[in-house]
Image (tube, rainbow, N blue to C red; front, side):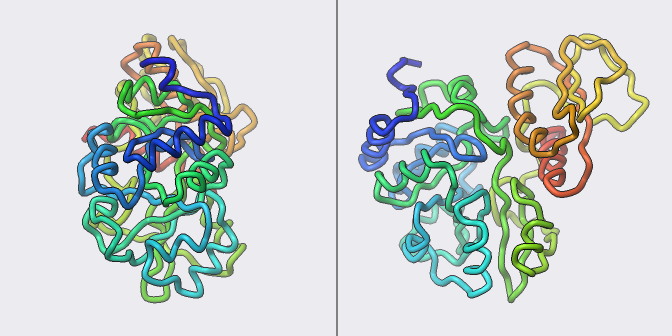
Length: 319
């Protein structure tokens, strides 16, 4: 990739990226969760480039990013009162809401669904880019389909090469896992994808009960069985496994009693936020080392741990 395709985040580079989006181009940019690959949500040809670059199937819907709440009227039919309360509590931030889409929003954005996934990122870089581009931005993670999500600009380069017209380098992302996705159906909130905001926090701040929806129907990004996977074969530690010395080992907080080529600790102090921020970063690091086998421990299945374990289990799925 040419150096000119990667620019440090600045007012000048953001303005350049916005002009690219206005002209139908595709830009990779940081959010507070992971790096996204964005295009003007109302430009079907531009959005099609995202699917082509990522090698993503067109039935897998994208998330539309806005910079202001009033932009929802451009893409969603209506906002129920309870959903407005949820938005007021968590936007801007890593929470995606599923809403009925307006007909003028291209079907390619929503995978042919009559609903659209929307969020307002808290990243100042992302918000400024949306504002300067003058349109909502459709953006999945900036990686090859089903592969590890990028948390650094270098990860985008390694996977997508010359695909994006421009990559804005904003450093490592804060959360390291994608947004939480919530649907509102017949007066009930449902969790479609665990993410950077835990269910306990949502219920505590809103007073709303959120149910975990179990369905085979694809309603949102990140619901496919295999996702977030590194090139290496990933195995979840259940106890008693014979560890290959030529492998890598990712532990939660304690160093394992094994000799491996690479050993990584998600959080020595047992902090789930730190563990989430490090998970994909460690996957990318191990990929660069050419190791073909990774053993990984699950984390406590509470709060943010639901999102971390979700990523681990999907990454370890064989197909």
